[in-house]
Length: 345
Image 1 (cartoon, rainbow, N blue to C red):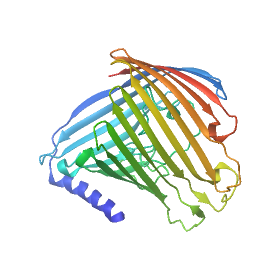
Image 2: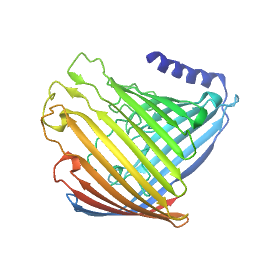
Image 3: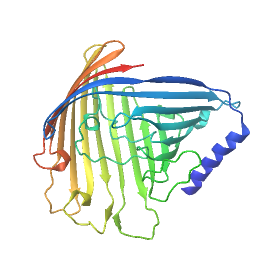
Image 4: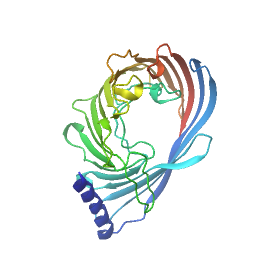
């Protein structure tokens, strides 16, 4: 594994010495969104907010025909402060694929590849429902080096990502990293027939040799999904599994930190009424299986109905979610409604 990573790094360094780079062009695009969120049950609050995200992209071409691009997103953190984050440099190698260096970006997780919701994946927006999904090498605060294949037969693409320190080692400039567990991630997507997309990914954590051997189980997880579109209908189905780290200190315990694995299933159906109006229904179920099998557990269940209407340069969306057993706690239920107006530019 280390040999592969070193080879990629040496290749990037060699290319920077061998070829001159032409000046690139800078573009800016993004979204602005106004939302109204109404919650009830265990989340009985209301909120009005504005979110925005600007993406600055520069790109160019080398003398040998290879391409390069750089992107950086400017988006707000809690409290309204703007952060420069989600950055990536992509080196296009023509028929040999792409090499990427990413910080808080370039995730290859397929946990939502099945979702056909008209607005968004509700379990990833607004109130947290406490569902545990597979880890992601491109998670916020982490840095990765990746290789992506060119498009293969049947529209197939594959990628490999390596995260040196999954604890949040997103270095800039020439800063040295710190020691910690690393993550490797593999993903695949293919389109064997018109309208059908099959996706899968797997990632695992490699234990950092710190001389302390307390782990009974190291983290690993993955997902697979199928989405099919025919006419105005789109249907999706997916499943994801996540096995968290278990240490000797909590092995066999009754709390969720001793969960042996989480099993998530999602189903989604969308219908395009016309070119402007779309509706959808989505259902997610997440089951926790504890290391102590004698402990009673409760599944998180979410049902979501959504409507999205295009107004030309803007989209008006209404999404409703009914959730049972939030964070795997019995009778910890909530209902959430989000009204959003989104502008893209």
